[in-house]
Image (cartoon, rainbow, N blue to C red):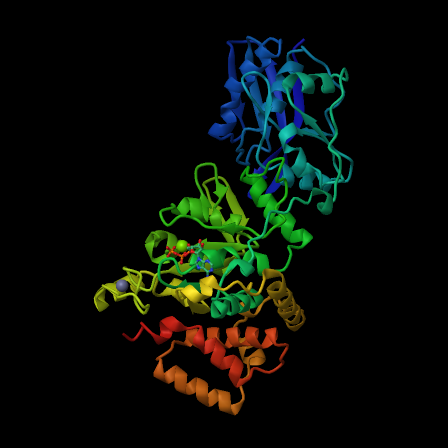
Amino acid sequence: MFMLAKLNSMVLTGVDAVPVRVEIDVQGGLPTVEIVGLASTSVKEARERVRSAIKNTGFEFPNRRIVINLSPADMKKEGTHFDLPIALGILLASGQIETTLTDFCYMAGELSLYGDLQKIAGVLPMALELANFDHPIDFIIPSENAGEAALVEEVRTFTVSSLKEAVDFMTSSGELPMVEVKNMKQISQRSKIFDFADVRGQDIAKRALQIAAAGHHNVLLIGPPGSGKTMLARRIPGILPEMTRSEILETTRIYSVSNLLNEERPLIQDRPFRAPHKNASAVSIIGGGKDPRPGEISLAHNGVLFMDELPEFNREVLESLRQPLEDKTVTIARALATYTYPCNFSLVAAMNPCPCGYFGSDTECLCTPTQIQKYLNRISGPLLDRMDMHIEIPRVKYEELQDKAAGEDSSSMRERVNRAQEIQGIRFKDLDINFNAQMRPGEIRRYCQLDENSQQIFKKAFNTLKMSARAYDRILKVARSIADLENSDTITLNHLSEALRYRSLDRKYWNM
Ligand SMILES: Nc1ncnc2c1ncn2[C@@H]1O[C@H](COP(=O)(O)OP(=O)(O)OP(=O)(O)O)[C@@H](O)[C@H]1O
Ligand SMILES: [Mg+2]
Ligand SMILES: [Zn+2]
């Protein structure tokens, strides 16, 4: 009567998934339920959910010793989605149901105490992994996760809303709705874009942000309260090129394992804009935690990470941003597993020029030079060194706010950004980089040559402002992006002078 049941499920490893075998053995002996095979606490909690779900579905929970083995045994298992295979496995192993569907059928789902299926994390990476198999696979998932699986045409995906429905399907006494395969256009649910046309005045800031978008430069916005820093930053994703199919899948995987997708938004098709609060913890920004999850830097993958009030962020957070900024991935190591999440984002930071906020503006600043220096020192060194551009955002004048004429809109800005990125694509086609901001010293020497006259001017500015070698490289890279926006092969004195203007921290305060 009692036997061994084997069912297939998946486990997440970062933004990938791998198959897991769920084996259930119902034996004689004292009634206990044991889960073995490196199961985390979240997996072990399945015991209580499954017990109630089975009873509330009208079956019996066997009063026996039940051993549940998740294999391969040397891989850490996280998540609540083993509930469904465990529950079905117990019903099979205790002889309450019979099935012929097991070998090519994979399943994942969390159960409520009443036996309803709940939305789970990671359906997209699971389906994408199953699509690689060399034989066709049936995949059973909770109804609420349907949208994520719709893109994966290689897998037949069925949705289930209760344990009862899953039992009927397994025992061939009922059908399940199959997920209709769709392409990205059909799933399209674009959110409203924030348009630069809403911004009055601020022509210099808009120009600078367009340069930053074109060359993928990290930027620091500096201005008094209310000058529109947040408003400007929010509009940057809208002038970046449309996401490619592979970018959409990469970013959506991250939202899938973070359980942030839903029926209204099953795909991330617009470049993300993430704005973590200054008090956010290192774990929430970088990623990690007990059951590791991607942080804000990964949720911003292929989009923008906006850090408003940069000097107010915890020092530990600022320090731990350095590595991911360099590597474009973040690795979280645990005793028995390592999780890697991509985090290729553009960093846009904002700050006031001083603690009171009004240094250099038309309102009187009440800070002492020491206070200002201390404030700036908080972001000094490594993080500031990674900012290609420092852009001053003055407060808009009354007349500019009154102006009825719309400023330049995002779609025409985006067109120019697109063209400048095409030029970079051709320039770097044989290299492992895509954007001017990623150039290393060798590439800078090769692609950022200056004529004699520009060299003289640069030398003078460099010495007067006591610039660092890092600043030198950054100015050349920004000058390259400015030239690309004009479709100019050579960097002219105009391009260089404009790039020098976006280094206000080198100019103004550093030598105060
Ligand atoms: N150039 C502008 N054109 C139109 N509206 C503007 C402009 N600048 C600011 N505003 C208005 O002022 C509001 C405040 O701007 P925002 O919050 O972006 O300023 P901020 O520089 O981020 O300020 P804080 O330092 O207080 O964070 C905006 O929501 C917007 O309504
Ligand atoms: Mg703001
Ligand atoms: Zn001040």
